[in-house]
Structures are given as C-alpha cells and as structure tokens.
Image (cartoon, rainbow, N blue to C red; front, side, top):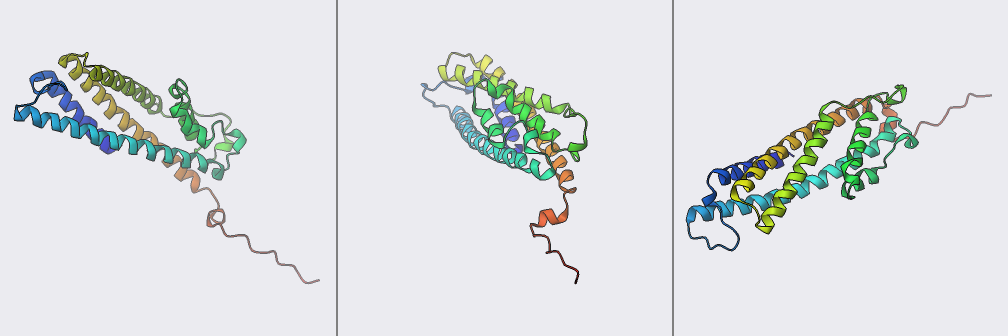
Length: 217
C-alpha cells in the first residue's frame, strides 16, 4: 500500500505536468520526435505498468490478510453462528457488481468489531473508528475517478486539461485511500493482537493436555 501511494503520487505529478504543459503529451497515433516528449511518454508508460503490477499484488495480499483475519475469529471465542460473513464471502463480495459497494465494508466493520478483546462479554456491537467509513468512501471515489479517467483516455475523447485534472484528483484520492487502508489494517491487527493475548497458552501450543492421574484405591 505504501508503494502504491508513492506511485500514485508520481502519477499525480505527471497529471499535473500534463495540466500545465500539455504539449509534452501526445496521443497514441502521433509520431514522437522530441526527445523530451519521448522521455515523458516512456515515464508515463513505465509508471503505468509498475502501478498495475503493484495494484494486483496489493489486492492479492490484502485479500489473503482478510481471509486469515476472519479465520482467527473462532480462536478468540467468537462462535461461527455469530459471524455474519464467512471468510470466502468477505473476499468474494469484492468481485460482485453492486454487492461490492456495500458488503466488503460491512465485512471489514464486522471483522474489527469481533476482533475486540472479550467481544462475547459486550452487550452491543460498538462502531468502528471514524476513519473506517472515510477509507471506504475514499476507496469508492478513487475507483470511480480512475474508471472515468481510463475510459475517456482510452477513447481519446478527453482534452489534456480535463485529463490532467482528473489524473491529479484521482491520484490524491488514491493516496488518501492507501493511507486510510493502512490505518484500517493496523487497527484490526492491533485488536487481534490484544485478543490473542487472552487465549490460554496451552491452546496456542497445540499440545494435548496431560492424561489424568488416578489416585490409588
């Protein structure tokens, strides 16, 4: 996520350059003769490819973390019948249209709530910190802006000024989303670490209990 935020910052700088120096950016069917324009084009292409690889890797690692974190809940004493979303459904909901707008956030919110130490002793579910909904809102907005920017640029039906503006705003939202996502992951990990301390050591060791000793008759 940190690497993605750095790359988003670089992309935002390129978009800012496009906003003030559109002559350095060419469309796909133009022949490049200016060496400065060539450098900018190669930098834009290289940054896009690296960002794509990092974005895919981030998704894979994040979903692995989400799955394992959900699988930890029964170890903290949370009955499975009190868990609204399974590990698989928490992951799969990200890939289902319309469902992906709501269910992933509700799963993340549930994961935080039921990772709290002594959750079973609480009378009601507490709400997550304020940056949780902010993260989800920033994530949705950044994805929406990136989709618009990509589609318009692909069709070449966008001016350099509009493309630069969209790129800067999308880059800022990407950075904000990454920072908030890091905060969400750290907060859930912190709660699970505290809950893990309450698990009896013999349960964590995986060793069976010693056999009972019988008193002589």
